[in-house]
Length: 299
Image (cartoon, rainbow, N blue to C red; front, top):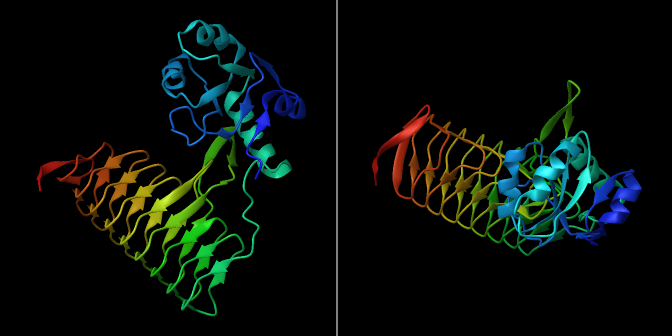
């Protein structure tokens, strides 16, 4: 996996123009998301996002409109940022992402032969795609699919009709039409976790993995979106929806049919009541319930 491209080469390939130094790009991500890379490309559509760019030290290049260029350049960002100029920054950013995936070796393609550990029980109707890694003593039920980029730890149980590493749901609007964005990351399931029937766990969008920790219990009909993190020993009961980038703390308990908003953090050992809609962070040890969910008491 190359995971590096010069800004000049990228712009030449796509007919784009940039100003500033010819940085080398190692990743892409949204400006309000952290990154494991020290030089990433992002985009901004409003002046107010300059605070995200300033505070995200991984960002070395931003796609934005020319009318915003002076606003961003005169801000005290504290780094020598390069800029790609575009009338449609979001579209251009995702065009770059799509180009890197389809035309280069920038992203991992997960095209290696699947690796399966010892003493596994995998139903004959289950599908194990190339580019997946399965530990020892793993049990996988009928008609489940383990997709590219998935890493399954030892002693994991997966039920029936479940998809690990499904394509996430990132949509942008372009001139009244919907455009679905390819997800290039993976999914990691920690040792000793149990995942029920009809569960879908989506791959991460740009980098790293959607993460399910060790000894996590996930019941039936759960939907886990891209870039979710579920820490060790958490319990996710039936019908729960965890939207993109949400974070479930160690030992937290999410009751049936609750929904967690994107990027919301549910703290360690917190409890979310049945049918709750969680729109704001939940502190460790708290109990919340309702729509919108509010604090009931501390555990």
